[in-house]
Length: 559
Image 1 (cartoon, one colour):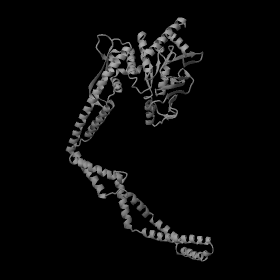
Image 2 (cartoon, one colour):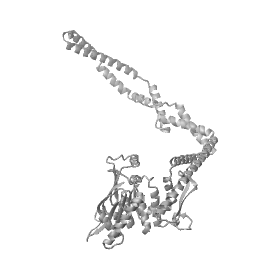
Image 3 (spheres, one colour):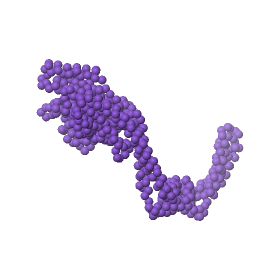
Image 4 (tube, rainbow, N blue to C red):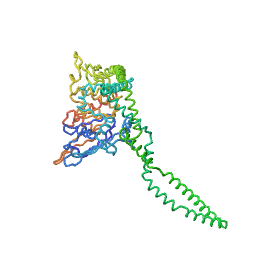
């Protein structure tokens, strides 16, 4: 959940910090106090566009920080997938420091991109403002909602559709790329045969080039090597060996007089042996170094041939041999090209049939779940004071098949008796759309993995009994999620588990917007203000207490 919001030098906010709680967090305030700044600052932290006018007057930089508790395996998996690791203190800090022309995003102190922040935000928070309500006007959103509701084998059925769709697409792409006429086929055959013959004629062996390079390097430096060996042999030749032998005989003649002398004799004897072995090895090596010009020319020629093949067909002999195998396969294909194309067409027919069957199976699951969701949404809408509502979810096949299947999903509604159901966009007002979205969130509350929901303008165009219905449904959603709701309606504010006030204060040269939590007494005063009382009379406060009590009763009996 969202634990903390810290804002500095943003618009009218000098420096503000808010500690949110679980349950239903309500934010209220006078018109123009800056309630939209809260949602705006959160959106900025999560990657929304920053304009220089958003900087507080006189400030060079602005800062927004969001702290989320890490209490969900899905979020941990997302962090691991993004290679951001798992924080030790079980919290995620997302920050954005902004100045004109530059923004720096960080997740737990590590600099990241705006795209990475948005990707992580998808599993942390769901913000519903007017724009999100409007998304219900698009059928694509209806499909997303139904799919997120579906159970009973939906995931496996969706996977089969995706796999079948990709197979069909790949075979079609291969067929499109295999459009060779006779002349083009003959050219392909001739080139492939030439390349294969060239490689096979060389008989390359893996590792041969490395061995030849070592030999060639030795040969090209053989003169210098021979000179060095000869000089070393001269220094350690017969004169040195004879001198060591004479020294050894002397040491042996006196070694019997002292154990230490015997040790010295043994060391000198070992030196004599090592020097003899060294001289023999040098002589043998010098003999092995001898080669004629023909051997050098053959080595150089073979190495040049292998390098030429690598230059044409790959950076290694392994790649050259793999290319040869590819040419053999191509020649085999071109030898009976018509049969090859026919085989692909047969594969495509079978893949098309597999895709059709997978789409049909997925559609059956969608339709079964649509009937359940339709019933639950209708009940949720009735609880939101749509007293005569009709609601249907149409699942129809489309002409075009995608990786999601062939279904088109559309929500249909009628809010007036006797009127047939029609698409949401043709019937629902902005306020009704917000209630439909709330109904969806209520139904999806137990299935949605996102912990924090923010509602802005959820109370657009409603009042009276409908406002109470919305308030009660927010309470239901808040049992499964942390809910942060900006409102101007007392019925919704009365349901708060935690009540915040957004207030603007001014002096001659300064204006500041601040957000702070209200205690019970001040929450009642704010409710009285929302009820329209200019003065905090005892009657106004009593009215607020009664509304708070009514909300408390709904919390107890409404779930």
